[in-house]
Image: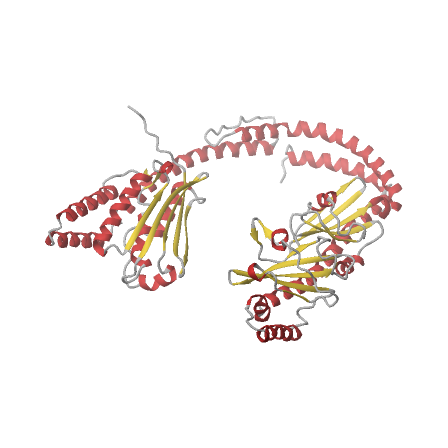
Length: 582
């Protein structure tokens, strides 16, 4: 049940009174309102039409894409562009093989009103084929550089262009659009395909939806008008039209705006990297509504002014305590939450919210203290667990190696091995610091590597590259060793030789540590790992530890391939080692 003095009741009574007055007055203008609804309905119809046009354009795009795919998977085209022909007979066989392929798959290679060009690259750039029945197309220079580059790389996708000068001598169309796509064999580009299409085919797909006073255009993201119902604009550049088109962010969102008597509706089509834009001239399309709209605007403006002043002054008085509470909440900081003074003359809701807010302030303060205490204890516990994860097999094997060295009278190696082992134990379980410098961590890691090379030989080489400015940055202790250990025991099964690389560098506001190996990769190593237990600190444990210390935007990522080995990337914040002089 609502309280008599509640803010809801006050607003309800005000809105009710205003609605009653407005309803009586607006009844006189019912016909005008119905005309306005018709205007909104026209806009909704335009949106539906754009969706239908989009569906038609996607069907046509599917034909173009299928043609590109058919060319790319064809051995006949690949041989035509790349296979050397040592004799006229071999050249004739290649050409006949291509002709047979085109005859067989002509239904897949002939979208409506199009022809295509296939050209080689590099030393085969003079090899090309055109399906133009009227005139063999000249392959323009610099096609790749001018029309297939995106973000500095060759875009491995179909891209549409509206340039109207490079094929003028050969195309049989008044206006045309062409699509490009590189031809790839795995990761190698051996050529490219160009499909040239009659712009009139695009025009036919939306012309039926053009109404008096409206214009539909297909505008590329660089401002080129690929097609337009205003035929004079087709194949031109128009920055103003592009400015209206970019109100649509993606294919799921309709952009709409009105400016200077025009209404613009835009829909982005990513397959074309273009905007489907409908421009409605309201003076032409809604001429009959113009006079009605003027009368309605005058009426609504007069009513709005009266209601605005009434509602403004009443609302200001009612909501003032609420704004004061909002100001208190907005000015509060995480480290200094202040309670809001309770006022007896305010409404029931304001009192309830104020009491709840003050109670939450106390709860948050208590909870924050508890969480900080728990996190501190948890970090200490996690570090203790990490420090106790030195594998006993590692210690046993290391001591056995020392015994063997002693029997062989290799005193220097015994001394150095014992020194490395003692240093590792001291750094692992002899200190309680959460973090150490990168320089210190690398030194510990070198001791670990030396011990393993004493045990297993030097067929596995470890290389370090640390930026000088990173040496005094702080990192969590024992952060790199698990990944080097993983590489030692699982990347090089049997007696396989290999290399492990440790890179430490600074990238913007992050410290990046990378551990790379040229071993067998994670999938091949999985079977080998079943045969021997994982030693040392768990790799997953390291990631959880970083997330616990610094948050989810830092951590460990790993990529692996049987061809290239395994790459581990550790992302950490930049922590300076600040020493205080006595």
